[in-house]
Amino acid sequence: MRFIGLLPVLLLAGLAAAQDARPAGKAPGAAPALPKASEVKDEEKLERSATAVRDMREVLREVLEKLEEARRTKDVVKLNCVNEKLTQIKGLLRISESSDVALQESVTRQDGTAAEHEYTKVMIANQKVMQLRSETEECIGQLAFRTDENLSVEVEEPRDLPGGDPTNPPRPDDITVRPPAASPTL
Image 1: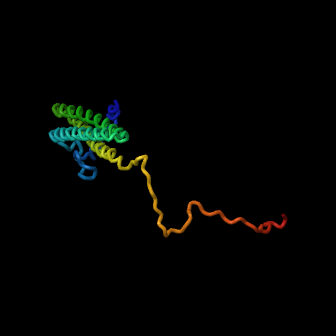
Image 2: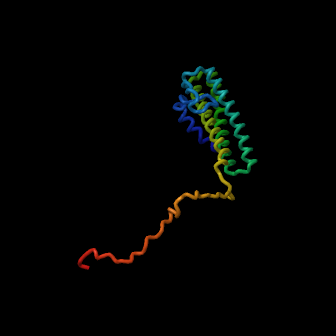
Image 3: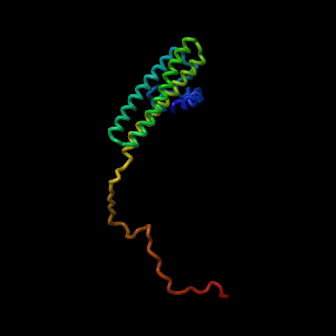
């Protein structure tokens, strides 16, 4: 299970990335950063977390559609690329769903530190899922940059170019006269 390896990364990056978390569905730079987890009220944390999990489920649905599209086109490169992103999204969604439940429990217990931690994990996962959504779009767009093996290109040279191939210059003429000796002793 590859997503388990993501948990320590999410935990370590939690506090630093919480300041840079953006609302779901927004591109980086499109919206101002959300306040720190400690500055968000518990009710707001619950609402934002639920919205983020809902948005991640929507992204999962979109990526599954892209996976089906890749299967229909029978493009193995696209299929592998989308499948890799899908696996990561599924893992992040599982982490987010369990963190959302833990956030609800922490708020109920009035454990502010645990609530901040769980909220931060959900927001970081949401940010990563939105990034993976963009990467999935790039996977699908890869077909435009690939060429068919049977593709042929015809090059038409303009007639007013100087003759000759610049990569293959003509050989110099043979030397017919021997130059004088460079040293008088020879």
